[in-house]
Length: 521
Ligand SMILES: *[C@@H]1O[C@H](CO)[C@@H](O)[C@H](O)[C@H]1NC(C)=O
Ligand SMILES: *[C@@H]1O[C@H](CO)[C@@H](O)[C@H](O)[C@H]1NC(C)=O
Ligand SMILES: CC(=O)N[C@H]1CO[C@H](CO)[C@@H](O)[C@@H]1O
Image 1 (cartoon, rainbow, N blue to C red):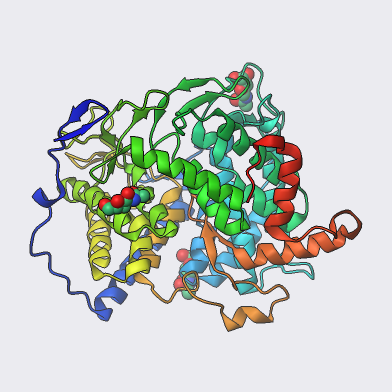
Image 2: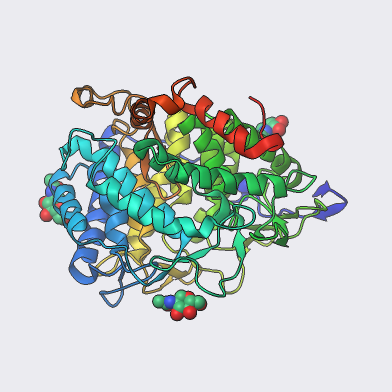
């Protein structure tokens, strides 16, 4: 029994009741390579199923083996899967489909799309494919990686998202029409993640192209959220982007907020930004005080700090990975083990779980092939090399393979208790779930490694400082950004020469536009 803020909650659902005490850790190199092969087969089964039955629609319906448009109508699954082809080493297929996309993609369309989803899946997918395309010599011109056909596509679609940011606070609307801007009568209420999940893609675009509008828009949105946080240092779930009024005041690490925290920390690393790091650390401190209980994270009211919902969500499972990136490996490991205990109990994690009873909430029993648990497992394995995390990955892979595979793909679990399936395969299955599984079992992958000599022939020193994954698992090459940024600044010599490069430049600009809200480094 825990006592916190005068509220007692019972956490009956403890780790050791579920974890066998003699968990045997034997996993040989041969096992690992066979697990890797299984992931590759999983990828091809669903990729080929998508190409055969669903392309050019957004997503595959894996039970009826047909396609349908979901988040746009721009072959979303293929855009999302592009970089995974290179991660698993299929260069010819990458070149074939990337060429096809460059010829056929057209974002000048009268469709209403989610600003958030389009950014993380489409802008992120295209940017990452662009930055990795040097590995296969795909349509490179003299100016690559600061130019290129995939980058042009990312630029085109991102530019169509910009009208959403034209609000009183700089925080964006949730929906935009790709041709006409924000639709008439569109609600001004957006979730926190829908405001704070742009800096990785938009900052990358600005650094590569020299067009500051993207990075500036993302920073203004982050500044809007920062100003709106409560005196307890917490942010809520939904906010009115015209008035900064919180319309949902539940504060936690999960759905509706999650990738805001992720982008502060990852943005701090990608752009070397003390301001982003400072914001992350401040918010993290409050989370530990108001949301953390026995290495679980629950919801509390952002103004009163009182617990509101004691639930766990599949999406929460990104958090230990983020903690690992921050260096808090021991805490991350304990939390991941809690989450994994849920997986072991049901074979999957549900969208909502009542922690005290250890049961999913009615109507929220599904598992849509989400990657977050495996993502954190990959980070923790990379950080510790503890084979326990390989065992976890093996279990997760086994569940999906056993329960979700269909004739033409892998299907969402509609109910984690009955294992009944749903006719859906979200594009993130190929962008994230299969990619993180593969990376867990591929310790020598170039995405984990140090500089690759093959890349040093390229003009910019690609691959020299590692990668940062966006929230859709699209890797961004840190070295490439620095190279183009320097180059772009040289192009505008007269304007910016006196300022130091990278983060300092940005912080200087930020200070000008943010006034007293800017935090000194
Ligand atoms: C690449 O993917 C295509 C399409 O699935 C397949 O036909 C081809 O054999 C793959 N190539 C390699 C090297 O795996
Ligand atoms: C986009 O949303 C607006 C406002 O809801 C609506 O009037 C319009 O018909 C929608 N456009 C499309 C293509 O669905
Ligand atoms: C950030 C965080 O959660 N830190 C905690 C990690 O674990 C130690 C030991 O339990 C705590 O003292 C820290 O507060």
